[in-house]
Length: 490
Image 1: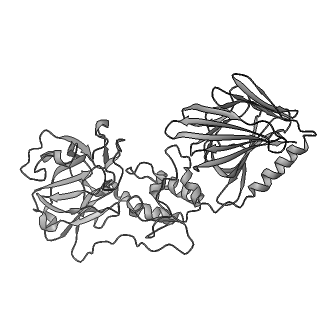
Image 2: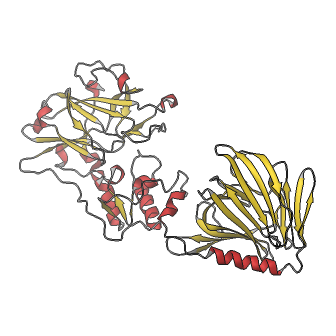
Image 3: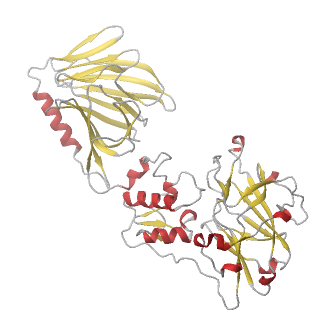
């Protein structure tokens, strides 16, 4: 770059900037800068800020732009250094001159003609410096920007090419009597308004902001009942603040209700989003007890039996039959009132690599039913006990130990789906959860005749539809989760 650095008139993109000076008094420094990437601060070039430093072997990096780094450096706080020479026009003489640095993904050291003039702000997208005392008017001046991959306390494993300076940078001079423009005023949120953060909706922290991204974040916040946005690096650009206010969302100084990620890279809710919901008032006990009573009424004379071989264990009576594979400890088939619940590879199991440690069962009893206990060695979790309870009415209940997600694969004969999902407004009946991750009270699967099975826990669970038809991933996050499979009749 050196003597080839190009100056561009700000008028080329006037509509994209909040300018503080007349059009002819503002110089864009959006260009390809000389650039050097180092593995860490210690390996950065010595005296990189000096006007006498030899940068002839450096590459180039655009502003606005982002870096790409070797994956092998993923755990290090690698550092990028920008160098560029800019000639100050003679008509800047006698004026106050400012350097405007746009969004930086980490706090950046700024040098002019070898002297450090400051750091960009940690908490906002734009920082301005009075560079008047450091400049030589009518001559070439060296500007150096030196920034790490991430600020202290932030993620050190981002190798996706999202570090850099990603919004406009420019220099401007104030005319006699002209004052530097102030940024947008940031007040407090109104009482009772839920405050969110854009960080919760942006898996990648560094990006080029656009109206489309702004609108996407605002729409998702509104859908979750969030009424204001916390002021931080991702929400501090005046363009975003103005856009958010146009959409009825104020940017405020309050801390967000959560700093956790609420939407993943695929656009689905994370489990954290449901912590924003009020406590569920759904009567799980009544629903389970009523379904149990209906199942018991269908059994005229209870005579539960057990049939066992070397490889399988079957618990059965007239209205039901449930078979366990003794080698895996998993259910291989289950039918209730003539409805096939599990078959052809369908079952309920931990969502992880697992191995059976032990398997045992009690004798059938009219009062207490039959209990089957399976101890699994689950990868990443250790030994976990699942207890399967089959009362005399044949309704299957599972006490699933451990915090592991649960995979439920129901029979392909149950083609109709219904979910009662907990929403920010009110409970919602859904026919599909494809492409989302709702928290549900229960799910039903039924055949064309309307008979089938209801899967219900004793508290809401987060439901994910996997690519496999009929398969549901239950995310619960508790040490023990009780799951009931209740018969549904017409």
